[in-house]
Length: 367
Image 1 (tube, rainbow, N blue to C red):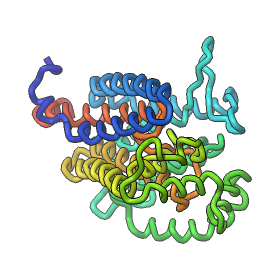
Image 2: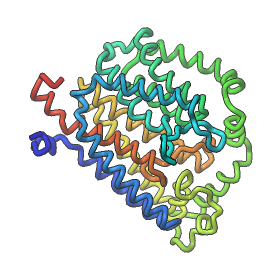
Image 3: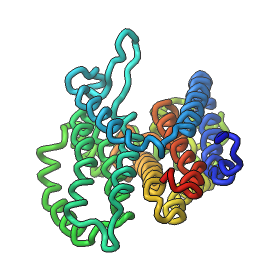
């Protein structure tokens, strides 16, 4: 039976799990330092995340690949329904209430796996020619990228919308698009940027950019920079990490967990953490080059690597004052369930595509 086939273990990517586990363990240790109750809740999220990982791993994804467009459009309907039935929190309408319960879901979060699978589906069915995609194919794929970008940015949730945009066009850049298209888009983007800032951004989004460009950073960023600087080369013991212990550092377990991490483990610890992320990103990126011809798995691995890189870069840049403050977590590290579970679903899908690869390597009926 398939679940005891030795070829599953042969193709299973154990390196991926070995790179993820240190991030989880270190994250929970830091969260427990700040709030033991949150650390216990995070363990529950870990359990849910691994259950989601195994469910995704066991899904017969290749056999039912034809369902992916339906999943994509169902998620688009959820995004559209936010505008009609959405629940507002903190001035943004991003959530849908689950009937007869007190729970809500955020369609923009659960859309990410569907978005990545749709990209993989389109590129697998229409691989790029040697000279790269031309305008016709590029615009066709762009439709599937820009539609959710517009719907999510309208909520407003520009951070998530921009991340999808970076993933979509980052994948196209690596897979191959004619250079003339990129040159044309670069010129258009430079011309339209001032108009986009003036007419498309909300006031609070403009304030974030203005705070970022001002000589004096915002209060949150100031406290974050102080925490990072106080960590020195090797960091401080828990009782001496005053920026966090005295609650000067805001959201120390989530958005600004990197600042607390550096306060505790210093510059050397920060370098080690960034190197761990770099190994994870490069490992995922290497899958793209190893699996020539299997565009579906290539695009999924490439998308996840872009997703982790974007989250990590924005979060760290935000904490050191090199990017506007946005609600982007440090992947697999910040406290919270939705982001972690999403990543585990994506890792489960990727592991399935890798572990069950033999089914179309050795049996052409499964291509």
